[in-house]
Length: 87
Ligand code: FES
Image 1 (cartoon, rainbow, N blue to C red):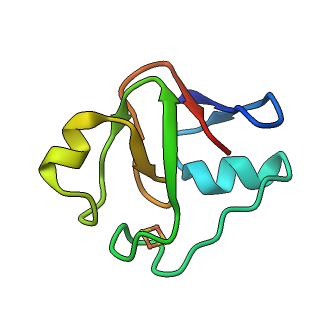
Image 2: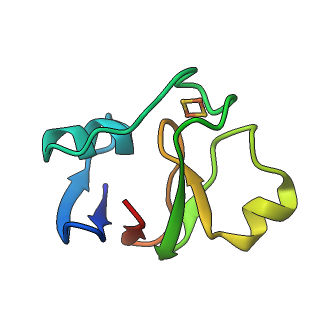
């Protein structure tokens, strides 16, 4: 599990091993627009302000993934204990 901070509201939530970031954000009332839910379309793209994503999508290029400043919230996870998102 890891923690996500929704920077615009300052709300934080723990993302359990069996749920996605989108599902965890939903529990604290933050809705994320989604389409494919499989890391393909890019609809759920979000800016990462702090922390390192664990990229599980096929949308971002390898270069974009290495920059670690964007994440697909429907499928990707975190390599750090906390991810601060611009949402
Ligand atoms: Fe398509 Fe997340 S909803 S990449």
